[in-house]
Length: 436
Image 1: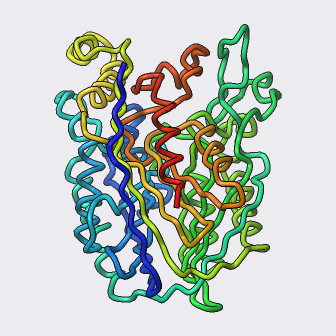
Image 2: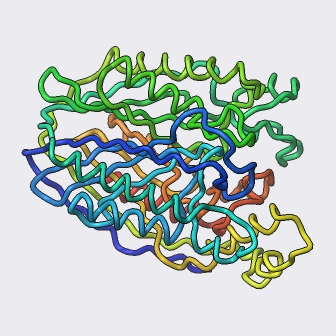
């Protein structure tokens, strides 16, 4: 089976760097589908959903980094959103990194999949259009007040008792029962954390002694509990907003490669656990900025790499179409098949990007629900450098396990859309994007 990689493009600029933070409320109306119709529709609001980000201005085209409290933005919609945000920032779509945080009591955006399910609602098209316009408008407003960036500061701190690997129970090389974002199974919760990235990483932007904005990165599914119809940005959004309020400058959170990571070792899914998880994440955010390394920002460099991943050969278009069109089976089965069909039929390249801040700070942007091993791989490839990884870019890929994960089984492997051999093309893309 052949895989195809399209060329890597990059550009670098020197001096005259400015930043323009933006913020928009993208909360959908009550009655809107959440998580693509796989959970109860919106019946109330716990906290507003937000789109937060920064525009970086320099001698070349602007760069947009945006993190949104949505479950996913996929395929043609992800491309359309990047084009609209690029127009607002007066740049080109390949210079926009758009990432969902992946909370499940939040919208999933895929209008092509919605067309496959005319009798089911997986998203509110009108609300989605309004949300996109709000984000674009917030970018335009932010450009009226850019601030000069002289330095960045980087730091990290361990997050205590939040993340655990979901694929920890193994029998004869096969994944057994799994603990997800929450678990009430005492045996599963007593198992080790397994492979995780324990560190929350922070990059902040400064003008002299004045902090302008901070970006945080941590790898775990971001839910404490969900499925009750109450819109929420959950514990990651709550920690982010508390930090913003305490610090007085924008704080933006990106979910890292958390495809196989969740809070189920430490979280029983009770409402009482949510504020505890908030505190644990917030403490790491604060700690990550206590002993930072300040670095002069003399140049920035942007790279983008369009990549084509082939679909898993065991799931054909005809097989998925038969499931989608079968009105006698459950809506959940039809939605799951339609989401996979959306990837099978989406033959456009998927954008991988990176932003280099000076000589040794890199922000890496990956699609889908990438496994934590990709994030750790990126760090191993940059000895002496500081790498922050955001996953959940274009969600059209679904889960992105490792090749051997398919033989191990488990939920993620059964829900992965791309061929098992995709690991190699993704890792090569990461290597290329990390190069200066």
